[in-house]
Image (cartoon, rainbow, N blue to C red):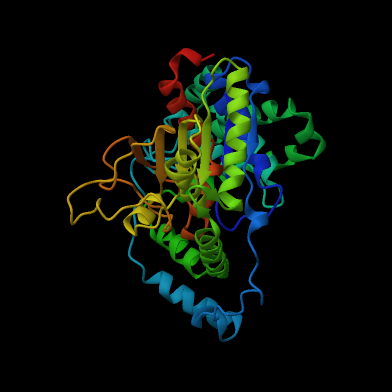
Length: 410
């Protein structure tokens, strides 16, 4: 079962794939392959093909709020705005993943479903100085602990929340201890103050202005402004240099080459499905590949399962920006875009209300898209990458694959 990951915009760190690969190897691969350690998991990196702004992005003006006045004045202004923001209730169906009851209604965590408990641990245990790979490994431990029946029984028998948090912390710590690389890095220290961090995470799910404050503060952060600048740059770079169906440019060629490698692996492993995970702009590149570049090459390669997270595929199709786009399919004609490609099987499109640059595909494509919201529980500034940092996302991904390819479940 070859798995390919294609990143989105604003990616420049060569180590970006390490935590994603860890989650895919430990949570996704075991669900549909009997030998997960031997599953081919590769990244189709294209960030090195994008030019940086020639003057470092100085064409973007500084914002009024963050570009003028003393720091104290800016803080007072933001505080004034936040204090007048009305109460906002987080989706009542979840703590972090959008699929269960919020713990804001209870003083215990044994009521949380597996996905939400795993996410709660994953976002609470790590410390700010921990790298992405270490956080991913704690997330994997959190996923195992949340589904452990013994831990579940102990949580139900615990007298209060403090006792429950200690049970969870001890269980995750024990699981982490089996990962020698984390022990060597001193990651066990993160569990010393875990109780306070988990309690804070629970409090943030309550219906109060803090939720709105998080969203507003995220929009005012300069990092969001920087992200938009790079987002536009990467999108324009791809669109202007992607090439033609019969002559792909350097960026789509990265994915095409990885698919050739995956096809060889697929045949060597008895026809296991090719799985593609994309993030953000990686989704648009994948769509061009399966609807234009692969058909033009007369290739027999087929992406058996495509998960597009935080993509803008629906929006790009509305703007008629794909190589295969046609004005024959629109609201005006009453005809939806058909998914007639022989190079695509299952398509799961995932978006988040807080992620302002993720888009749904509902109402645009005729059939064949499993379109679903995934609530990351993150601010506007962080939500765009939040999918790939939640154990619950990978668990849902694994379950989707298990349903799509039941004979291959281990």
